[in-house]
Image (cartoon, rainbow, N blue to C red; front, side, top):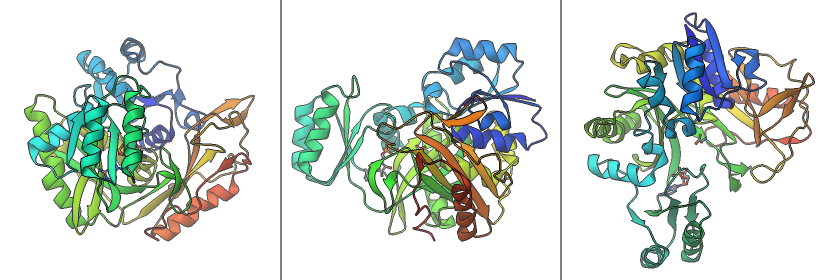
Length: 418
Ligand code: AMP
Ligand code: GLY
């Protein structure tokens, strides 16, 4: 089978690494890919946001299955274009991708199906939003309603901060926007990943992310500085609760609305006193959560994604080893602000590449035979073991072996569970 993965980050490296292990995979192309992905797949330059370019590429290369990694091509309707042309695709339609692209859409779905989430109100002008915040008090959460690359959310500690966030949104920082004002939810956050073929659902794992850049969860938010799986806070009982109250009702409501959700639903949850509420949905694998999930699933990932795309999820089992995985993101100094680019990374060739230790590339390229950092988040050093402590030790062992003076990482990934 010829498989095309769209994307070029750590998530796509992990997907490619797992899928390559499955004997059903003959040819594997990742577009655009990166220096690490080039070790497990062919990389192809391609505008993955262009429906026409992706379609033409898939036709020319006799692709049997397309896996869409990031949210942007989903929001751009690339999955619809491929499906309309008869391709088998993993990833939701443009309409179903609104579960990530639009906060209002998701809130309306939650209301319609009774899924527990924060109380909310939507405003299209600053003055009534400010008045609402003044009436509610702080802490309170302000969200720009649209894809803002995770940067459109302010958890305001004071009314003043909330007002400033509202003004920034309406002053055009994110383009044409409305604002969603949400009740602040306290608790512990965890992520839950569920495959859905539009009808049936299959949970494939839990993880915990580390969004802040600094040790002890300090400093600005990032796309994620590390993750581990499983997340102990999401006990089997709590997973059942989330499936029954949040995930299955959402999938049923999406089908009822004529926009069945097919792909991976990433539920961001807030857990307190044995009760889970939805923070947000994403319609793709998390990055770096995907790295720990793929490390644990291995080659069966392809069978699961295929069953999802073919509407056969009711038939497939997931085989879980009783294991743990942990990933540490190495980022370029300065990230998430302006960071240095093009610095060489040494020591990568000597690293072990096994089912217990893998260094996934997120933002790398090869220049004159040398691997250089091209992005903010650059590597995801990932370990797997029988315990979280073992996975942690194996991940940091990779970090230590990498010679990259312009890089940094958090030293405390996994602290909550260790
Ligand atoms: P989102 O982009 O909606 O995931 O929000 C980003 C982050 O903001 C989440 O991961 C939470 O840490 C935080 N957050 C969002 N909404 C809330 C809320 N209603 N209460 C508390 N924290 C929130
Ligand atoms: N790690 C968070 C995300 O992928 O959105």
